[in-house]
Image 1 (cartoon, rainbow, N blue to C red):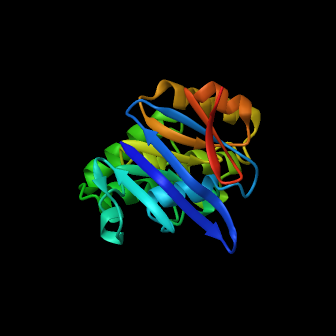
Image 2: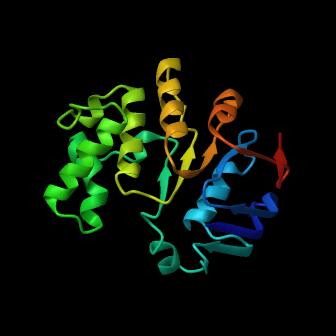
Image 3: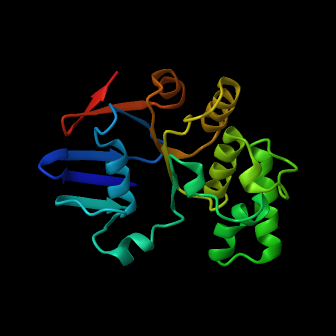
Amino acid sequence: MIRLRNIRFRYNCRYVLDGVSLEVLRGDRIGLLGANGSGKTTLCHVIMGLISPESGEVEIFGKPRRTRPDFTEIRGRVGYLFQDSDDQLFCPTVLEDVAFGPLNMGKSPEEAKRIVRSTLASLKLEGFENRVTYRLSGGEKRLVALATVLAMEPEVLILDEPTSGLDEPTADRLAEILVASDLTYILISHDREFVDRTTNKRFQIKNGILSQVA
């Protein structure tokens, strides 16, 4: 589904990605570990086309991805959960936020509402439709941000520090949701216990090098 070959990217003179290669197959649940600034988020931004590598190849769904239109084509098929939920939530209500993606994918208002209800129910957020987004707690915002991504029915999901700011019960709930899903995903986290619970392959970035860990 995703293949990266010899990706190099640097900030000033320091390579945070120095010849990184990675394959994501259908059914993979990949945990991406590493210190702050090690290049984890940078790698995922390369996959999403938010930044361009200095060199290397990006192939997604069997096609090379080089230009902005190449990556525009995959939006929706690859869902991205940002580290900061406020970067993802911008509508007045939860209903509008979660419906935004389906509506932009051509769904009718009735279809979008059905998808919203179904998605919120899967996250145990029934009754949140008319909640005001900015008044939600940090954990509620995190789950609603995830709902905005899941509502687009992505084939691959990228989660950037999904447990950031979550209390333990909400993090447990998120882990249960991920484990019960049939999604292929890449999960960035500092929480090794959470990664161990929710992934079947684990990699670490250190000094620009990606290596698999137990």
